[in-house]
Length: 152
Image (cartoon, rainbow, N blue to C red; front, side, top):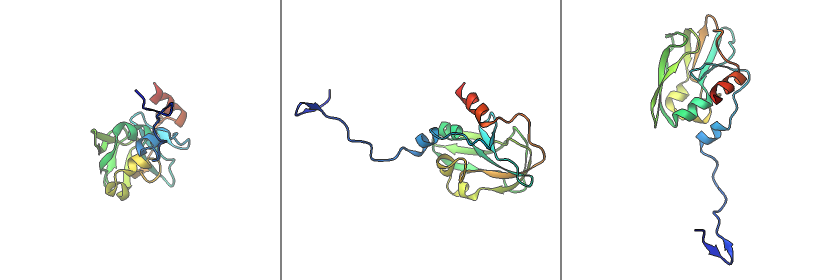
């Protein structure tokens, strides 16, 4: 029952703090220039044959607060659709899948040092690794297709 003072119900003060990172991510839209896998990874357009890989805001939200990232090492060969690392959150451990095949040319040390970047900035500072791509698979989704996929 609400507390009544001077004939008006008591209401909670307005929220003074910003939404937690995981709630802000849910409100993000998927960048149109990226391509998406059904395993919830994103891939940037290749520049000089090198593409950047990360996980989507949808995946980051589902994982919860990421506390550990095991990324593929520079020089590793990754295969499209196969596990190449792990992300550990306060809720679970999830395999990281590469959306493309190729050689890893860079891993994001900032994410290794501060895994929460995956939650707070999945499309920019929270990218995971860069890979020299042989060929981009045809089964990657556009942003609109990925949104429809995650809505179903």
